[in-house]
Amino acid sequence: MDRPLSRLAAALAALLVSATAAAGDAATPAGAAPASAEDSAEGSTENRRLIERGRYLARIAACNDCHTPNYAASGGQVPEKDWLVGDRLGWRGPWGTTYPANLRLALMKLSEEDWLRNARTLTYRPPMPWFMLRDMSDEDLRALYRFVRALGPAGEPAPAWVPPGIEPGGMVVVFPSPPQ
Image (cartoon, rainbow, N blue to C red; front, side, top):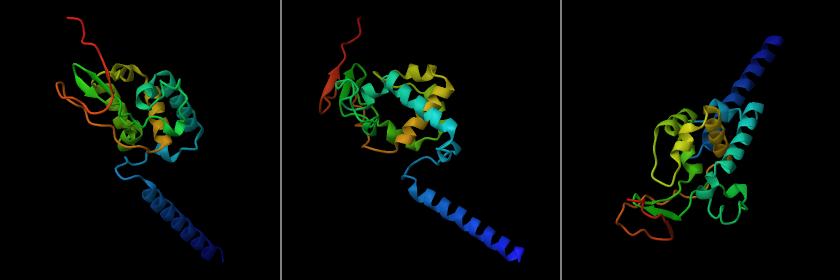
């Protein structure tokens, strides 16, 4: 009698695992990096701690100042659901015109390890303070990554960089040329 019940329990468990995996695949946004063990353990105490730390870092490292529309102008009074979606306000200088990236879309395309590698090795056009990312600890970078991923995808991609000498469309903040 125990054997048929054991087989039934095993079959139900396998069905549950298959259904859960299929639901997870269906819920992954198009173009998103595969879920990491950290993403699947979203409810773990350690992951919750890192997400909270990432929320704190996004505030104090001034990520929202550029990557969240109207954040600086409103004194930080933007609902969290609207954070880090990039901005159409351009930053113009000798490098051309750059636009703050939509981090919520960008980080969905990266694994945590890719994010760590990029943060350590890539440089970006001004005014992005890429050197601040480079100097952060791995734990802080992981915390930012997990917080942004926990927010989920939202918004549209930022406009593309406009080379020097080409007039950008829309509003821009103009940086003075550096002293000669």
